[in-house]
Every structure is written in structure tokens, then in C-alpha cells.
Image (tube, rainbow, N blue to C red; front, side):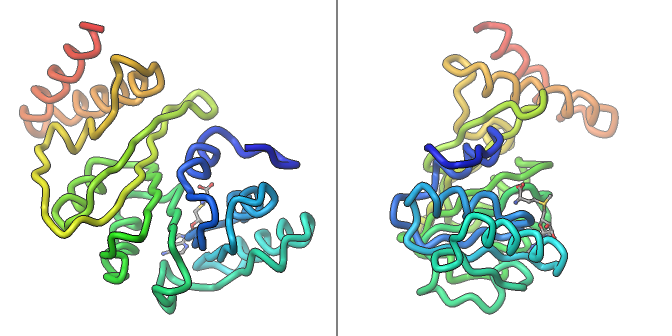
Length: 221
Ligand SMILES: C[S@@+](CC[C@H](N)C(=O)[O-])C[C@H]1O[C@@H](n2cnc3c(N)ncnc32)[C@H](O)[C@@H]1O
């Protein structure tokens, strides 16, 4: 994707999952870099840059004005998707937030349970909780990728609703659809997951076992 300013690899990965011609909602937009980059690249038909706080929204407005994409990108002060109408949005990005915030936003917007909507989720913490929530609520991961930004691995989930509930084992909640055998960034993310699980093993030895299973898979590559 070519734009006058470049997104960092984490936001670029999110942006790459947005469908061409999408009506985008970027929830927790802060500087509105992602919707502005997509508007400049001609990738979205319109975008709403939304944030719960005034100050990030002000920064977002500055970016929109600077790059003169006001006709395509509007701003909205909102808690998650509250007040949004289903017809306004085809693709939703929720990036740079913790798992519990993401789950709270999704569960308050039941209209997302629609096969035509695409969710692009980038949890900063506890992605396993987000994955468990998704599978318990009829969503499925279409694709999952990882990247390294400022030396840290991140994962991005591209998600759609299916009418049925697919099973989600505890192992799957940590590893998702990642393919460390084929991708080094996936491998780096899973090494981090194994490390976090190892730290939690003092509280529950099940976490230690999961950590070992993931580590063994990575060591066999
Ligand atoms: C760390 S920034 C992430 C910015 C950008 N999405 C990114 O990934 O780089 C998190 C932003 O989410 C906003 N936020 C937190 N909870 C929110 C909620 N429930 N609804 C909308 N925005 C929220 C914060 O105000 C903040 O601007």
C-alpha cells in the first residue's frame, strides 16, 4: 500500500486486512493514521475515526485536515461502537487495546454478528481471551498474521461471523491460526506466548504444560 506517510508494521498489517471499498470504522483511532492512510490510498469508500476521548480525537482531526481527507474520513466521539448503525460500517478495526476492552466493545455491538462484516482485531495483551470470546460467540478467524514493531511481536486477527460455534481448545486460543513453520514473525509471537505461559505456571501447572507444547513445536522447526 503506497501512502504519503507510512504506517508502522503493526498498523500496516491491520490496514492490509481492510477490504477495498470498505466502509471502515477505526475504533480507538487516536491519531487516525490508519483511516487516513487507507483514504489516501483510495482503499476505503469512507471511514469513521472514532475514539472515546476528546484529546485523541483532536489529534485524529489534525491528521485528517493535514492530508485533506475530510470528505472521506469523519470523526466520532464514542465508546466503542455505541451509537453506530450497522449500515454505516462493513469493516471494523480495533487495534492497540487490551483484550478486555476489545471484548467489551464487541459484546456491546451484537450487530457485528453478521457474515458480511469483517473485524480486524489487534489485542495488545491476552489475545487468547479475545480468541476464546470470538469462538464462544460464533465468530471465526479467517486469517491471522504477526509482525514485529519496535522489536516486539504483535498479532492481528481477521475475523468473520459464522452462524455456528466452532470448538476452541485452550491450545488454539494461544496459537490461533499462526504458522510458525512458515513465518518467522509468527514464531516470534508464539515464543512470547510460551514465555508468558511459563511465567503463569507457578499459579497453575497447566500453563507450564501449554508452554512446553508450544516451545516443543517451535524447537522442531
Ligand atoms: C493505544 S491507542 C491505539 C491507537 C491506534 N488504534 C493504534 O493501534 O495505534 C488506544 C486508543 O483507544 C482509545 N479507547 C480506549 N477505550 C476505548 C473505547 N472503549 N472506545 C473507543 N476508544 C477507546 C483511547 O482513547 C486511545 O486513543
